[in-house]
Image 1 (tube, rainbow, N blue to C red):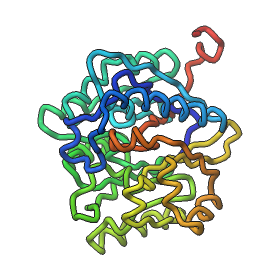
Image 2 (image 1 turned 120 degrees about the horizontal axis):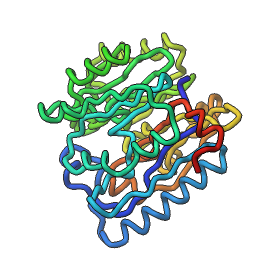
Image 3 (image 1 turned 90 degrees about the vertical axis):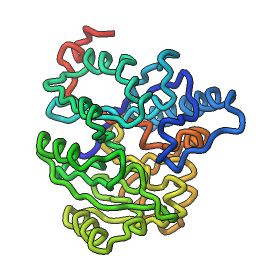
Image 4 (image 1 turned 90 degrees about the horizontal axis):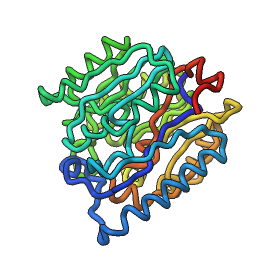
Length: 313
């Protein structure tokens, strides 16, 4: 299935501006008051979790630890992904302090509750300076097994090839740039793919043949495309994630800045396919350079029978 009802989120302990990732994440902005960043992030995070739960989404919350300091741990989708066949994939990260997130207990939480049949570890590619930052680098069409990815320093072509071969995915690769012609660091800030709706900043693709190939791939797989402009890209409108509620109804999760950037006709376009779920994460977006989608790690793993029987707390 393309979407899930279960997501995992990391409650921050020392959220802060991350100089390790600011080199090529042009969305990040250093805060005027670094001391208030953590408290504001906590308030936004807790509000986000409550909103998702009110809409019938199951949210697993893992509390981050103070040490080692991992300022971007609030964005867990970059270093692991899970799949319906029981596969758990670990990814090679460019940022040195982002690699430390693997030691924060998330894997133990997943192993306790879910049936993991195969762990596919690409993290060793860091030794060769080859990076592939999970569902930040790739936007996955799980139904049709297509990985959409834009070229960047965080998305190495050989690492992408290894992912595709191991998990039996096709790839649709393209160049994407912002309005200043700088490469976009993660694919998931410029596009999102749901069951029937795809959101994409087609303006960001300077090569016409790549833009047409992306459009054709999305349309050939039955997606209705909502096209964004650069203003909406900068408001994180590309960084949405479709999930579903406990009754299977589609929800499109996005930040308040993303929703407010959409024109009335675009909002109606979204509402034809999904129910919008809008969260206020202005502080996290501005300092962290990531938005609503980045904060959600989708859980597609089967639940362990022993957990279903109530053995675990």
